[in-house]
Length: 197
Image (cartoon, rainbow, N blue to C red):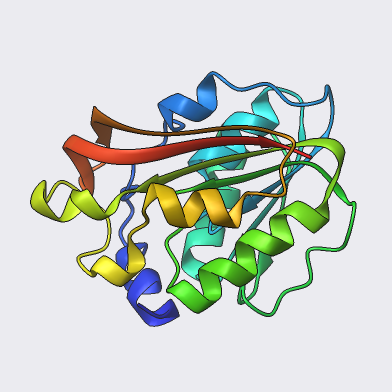
């Protein structure tokens, strides 16, 4: 799926995944007033939520349409967000830069997944926290959201290996009901991660 696919999905005035943040993210805390990087952020629902909690938020996505809607949503909620339109595979996150990195349903092919996940660790400050939510490979049988290509879905084993450098980590696969706009709706199989550097 390329930027044209996502620009098309985000071209409607409606928010494809709603404007409410992901439920797992809502339960997380980061360093007060910390710098948070949101990867593959789309239309900004999670970035706006974090900005409303007082964090300094940067959202990166390669869909310009999505980031334009991020800024629209930020304006509605009277918060400020830095947006960067870039390819996540080639963009430099900078080392020891972030107090938190968030990736909610950012799905990448295996070679890019390894690259992005390794950059997450090096880009976090010591004590920094990563929060990731993704659909598992079992999600294909649910048909309630996420990629329809198994190569873009994740397994516990893959993510345990990707996040093995983290000091404190929770990785769990669960079955939950998701209601996030018209493209994430229904019983789903997801993997949730919290990692601390």
